[in-house]
Image 1 (cartoon, helix red, strand yellow):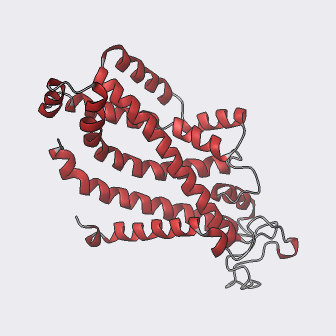
Image 2: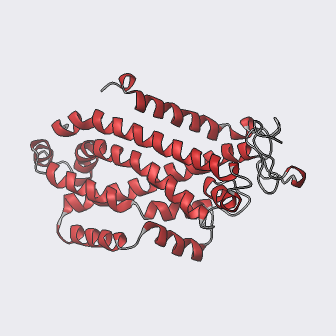
Image 3: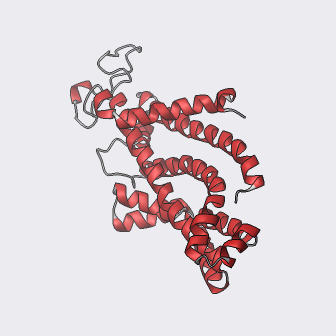
Length: 280
């Protein structure tokens, strides 16, 4: 189906584009400094509520920091972690999966058993353990979430490779004397990528939720970084007196994750004919 005819996917793409623009230009778009305390303005409600102020359209938090400014800067953190962690997981997983599927034998057995061991540890539990030891930082967050997601890519790449390496175009390349690296990079990888693109799209959404969950548990970026998960954690004790503190970051996570999933659904349907016919 054309993207222009898929209204949910088109709306999702619009939300994603808006989030990217907001993340890129957050310092220019934010009405105030997201980390500067203004105790005289603490717990100011949104501007349409009684006691609200146009200077703080979405209100302020317990330290008087502007909620809208923190949301805009938080988009940068969520997208950076989501995209970077998926990139790390994809590069590692696809590389290992291609090697396991093409080589077979002991390499295949070893890599798949490592994957089984990895899957035995829940993502959040692994994240809590590693970040508690290494400390909370943007790099550590990306590495932990990336390292916990490589197995999915490895298994898909391995399965596709096991099927493709028996195809005629791969046999022809081998018969012409092409080295293994050339066969993998020029013939197998392009055929594996369509399936992995769909998986990567959904993985970005899951990674954003995982980052927010770790931040909610206090294992995200150290304060006063404006992470959406940390904002949820700060607002959970003020649900009745400062409802906006948890509402707006929760809506931001919901909208972004839903938008990515809608685009992922469209991408999966769009690539289905290509994935069934194959290329080569």
